[in-house]
Image 1 (tube, rainbow, N blue to C red):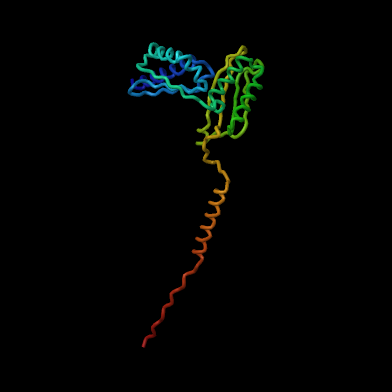
Image 2: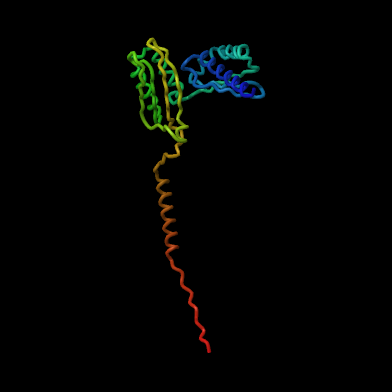
Length: 232
């Protein structure tokens, strides 16, 4: 019973997230986070276009709050907006932008759309980008295309800091899957070594300590001499 309740609870959360994304529109929302507090449900919407999400005088927020109460039976939903300052470093927004471009211009210009998005992300300072498109591009058979630039971690603990997202474009030939992976310039990589003056100073200090330890070990201690007492 507990497992079934947990599954239903997660399904309801997923439906709420998808409804909010569809209500606001593709390409305007990166992620939706739901937190449960004693005062009610706190819904945080991350977006790069807060004005379009809020609406004039907050009319869209009020309408969305009413729907969440009536349709999803939330007691006291409170919607907060988390503004994304650098949309080019957000994988979900970039994936939705590519999907919208494919739906608007058609799959024939998929290379132009992919390369423009790739360059825009790299110009923002990203360490690495990978864009994958899978679908009928441009022929009748489905094919996978990969566009990449820079440095991107694929495995290990460092790969967890890579921002990944998926989107779907509904074009006339068929559905096109979009995957975007971005390595932000603000992440800290454990295997990234910066050689500067401080780093070189630490190396010299360590070398000096090691030499001092070697000298101490090479100094020989004087041997103790014992006198033999001759017997009478």
